[in-house]
Length: 285
Image (cartoon, rainbow, N blue to C red; front, top):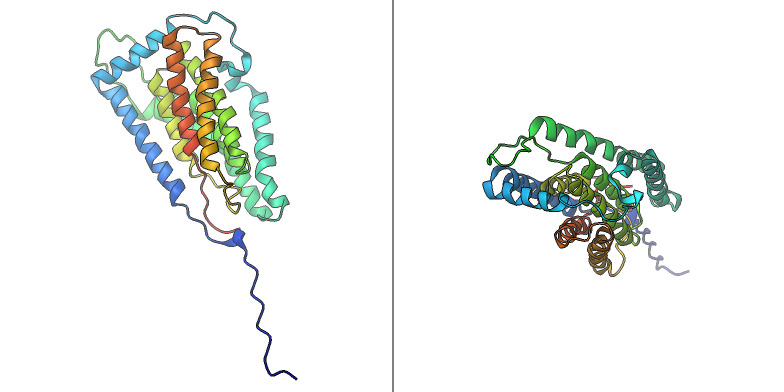
């Protein structure tokens, strides 16, 4: 009989239970919220900031659309119950897949899904309180007649929060595609807010940055899943797609160069914000 004992078998590694690194998402939150405060300060509290903001608003809304704007990319779709119902179904299905594959326990999955579903409602409340109670707008120029504060935009915050939860609920390999399509959708709709004279350009940017900052604190259903190869390149391509497709869609209804350039600027901001977005990966399964 051999006196050498067989070596003990190594315990299988459980990557899903390994602690995660939340600092990336926290860093995104801090940077995005800081930028939102900076945009508010420059666009609202400086003389030249108000001039630029008002000039872009007047240039975009001066000419009406020359062609019918498709309903799915109009401002009206933001309050369409069917859109939010479809988004809720996608969030529930997407965030539940890790549980069906055994990566995440049901309790954690339910809590994550509920958090994602409640996020747009929370954003709506925050946007309204900031706009109507917290933030103010000084009148620095007598010729600017619209003196009431309009930042952040509730509609822009709502549509961006919808895209953010869809990105968070999507598998990591699918997220660049959701960013491309969702970013285009949000960009065209938020451009319409300016074209219709509802909001200033800075209102849109502030709203997007607030949603991205707070959205980075959402739990990631796919925290245990490694990022696919080429994820950064795919997100860069998603940004390019968002900018180009937004310009094309806006240009079919608003052909003036100043309007198209504004749409490009809005799409560049939204595409970049979504491209850098990461939900929070913290805790264990």
